[in-house]
Image (cartoon, rainbow, N blue to C red; front, side, top):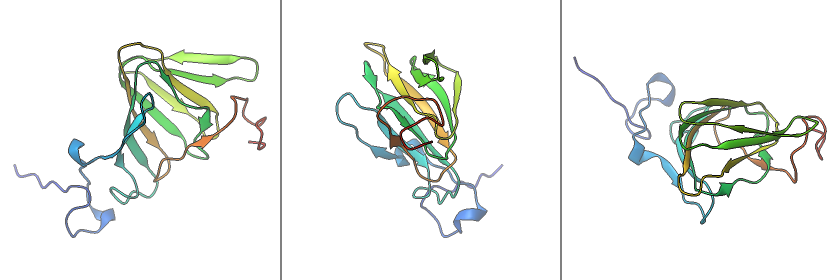
Length: 154
């Protein structure tokens, strides 16, 4: 059998008529300051010409937390590769904390304010994220709130 492998950003074929392969070494890495998540973009408008999907690997260091944020009108699917990340959101009555582990999936609907935490003192939490947008969308918000009751009415 012969396999024809196309890599991201390579070759002359139009972006929309072939399968794209993004080797680990070809991901766009966004180095993070100490204590912050490192984002490695694999599939995006910039890497593969994707029009409706962003995918990447995110490494949350030990004892870290993101700011409160949402992803605009983009849905986000999350797969836990390693570690035990905690997803925190507000259900309108109280703060809810969902802890995941390797093999678990999460769905974050559009405009739902949340944050990710890694309470482990030694192990990073590594997740693969897929969003329904071609680039990562992250809108910081001052606090967690129930959808429809935020500072901007969302």
